[in-house]
Amino acid sequence: MNLVTRLMGGARTDGATAATGATPMDDTANGALDTLCCVLRTMGEVSFSIEDKLEPGEFQALCASVACHVENGAAVPELDIAATDAGTRNWGQLRRFYIDRR
Image (cartoon, rainbow, N blue to C red; front, side, top):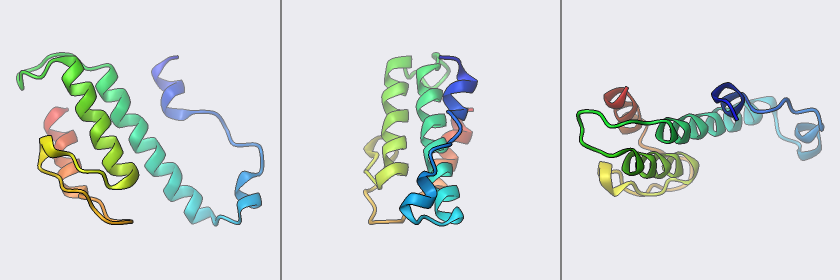
């Protein structure tokens, strides 16, 4: 599967939004979070060694942990990100993580 297909996914044609009662804003927010998680995981999967001395496999695991934080507020001990309650995330540290790596 190529990078564009992984990031873009397929078009939703099943009427799922109407069936679930979700608002367009809910759908947009959920889509944005899903896309961010995909970007983070893909960034780890196509990584290579750089000056931070993390091997690609280690970085892939770290990206997966960061994606879990986005999905459900899981802790990311490697980045000193504590678990968070429903709906809150440490967006500042997540931005810094991405910026520092890229």
